[in-house]
Image (spheres, rainbow, N blue to C red):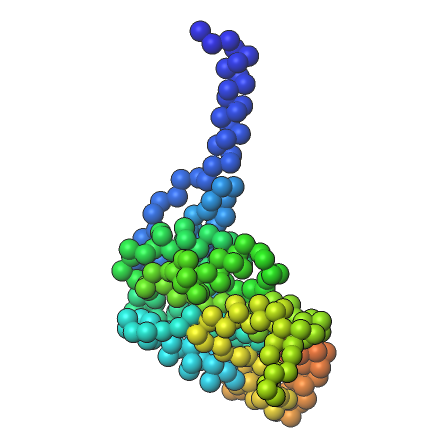
Length: 293
């Protein structure tokens, strides 16, 4: 018979171990689940279904028609089993990078598109993630939002390997879509250019710059998102005001006063983007309709 004190100690040890282990998660039914999140745990991680996906549509994204066309076409190639590229969506915050990926999911989920969201720090688990989905009859975008690295991070090395395919390559039913405010996903410093040299009238980058370009260069598609001009911003704000009014069966509340208010709003925010335009439209329409009673 075990000593009571030893039994109590064993129970405490087992309780501690149970807290470290991931809770049992049923296998995801991808026929009804369109998106999942990689949930990190103490020793590994697991895929957790996302019950609610933002209901944004492609037609809701205004002022980025060229970017929509490029990313949508690449995704359609992928869904058709044709050659397609991993994609880096880079540029100014609030310009619709992550919203575009979610809108594409909403548009193409009926055709078999699925998305797995992965935090930047969890990209080191890419082999485990794709191992869980490689046999599924669906097409998956492994999506990591707002990514930036410091050189030498383990997730940086894993992503580089996956994109290059030299050591580890995802299966044919997986593409990688990443968003970043940085074109090369790494901080850039003035000192990086000190290693550059001129050879036969051509500029050759130094090692620091070459290392930073080496990761982003492995993405087949670079899609840039840039700040709007004032005229573009005002036009997107006008369209959003019209859309929000139409949802409430009222005529658009847009006039010169709204235009001036939209410009002032962007100046106060210090930014001109689709996000800022939508925020203004929500403020303006809500304020005006509330005043009407």
